[in-house]
Length: 133
Image 1: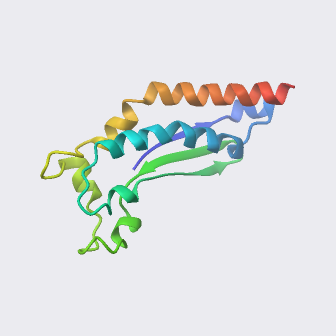
Image 2: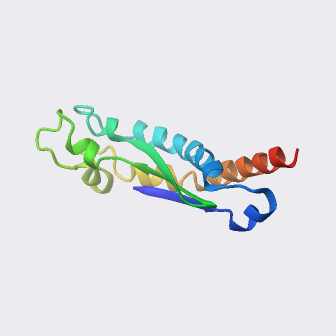
């Protein structure tokens, strides 16, 4: 799992921006990373690639956290996963026998760090502009 958090404690007093306001902005910024990682992920049964998800939560009155994850309980419980294990970390850290997947999640996230920051900054700026009307 790779994640990003945003804290607008200072902005809260200025424009009343909450964690609930930030969460959709963060999730939108992470979504393209998931698509990039999936494009580099190996597919045999489809179980692991279908376990990709962008999730998030409000972590405080003025804070939100979003993450890109693959594997976990969703993969373990998938009926196509005969061994019922979370093998996504093995793909991410070692690659598949075909060579696909190694560092796919990491690279898709870190490679877009500046773009995600820009998307989040632009989203927060839009919120401020809306609140000032």
